[in-house]
Length: 256
Image (cartoon, rainbow, N blue to C red; front, side):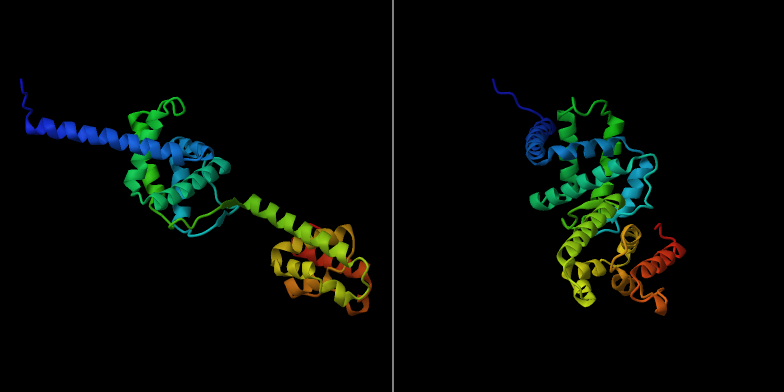
């Protein structure tokens, strides 16, 4: 016996069949492509407060390359580490979207399907949560810098990197010039010159070094700041020169 189905029923069957196929393909895509470390970022997009999302969206809209989250940026009640996690996750999704040539809609639906499939990892994902997540992720994805965002650094990360580089160059300079007697040779050493090129950010680090042990940091400080607080009669007297620069530093708000 042959059964004829109304046209609208046939269309619905085809639609749901294609939908099932699409869901399977999107789940396979997400299982293969989402790095484990970025799954918490997806959870944070669901759970953080609206203010944090708005701040992150505003921040992303002004970025097109590797960037540093400034010290002054606040994310409401959301921890900075959680905000960084979200931005890193979005950065990864930017790249996936470019690599797979996906639309924002396709990518969002794929991730929503993934969340439903992994319900044990994403508890209490209600219809309201789903709608909120879709809106949030869509707003975060619309500032697509074509995969240019490669890394996200906090202000503290940046400071730590700066200090580590300074200490490395400083140690190298001291080690390789300890046998030299000519000041011109000491201050022309490549590591010393690299420190100068680091600019005003290293001034407090140089002053801290100077407070621990007077050394030939004076040409570097002059080159970076354009200042010279050393009295003419104190030139060549390294302790007096160090004291003059430390006084200058305190007058300019440096801790030294």
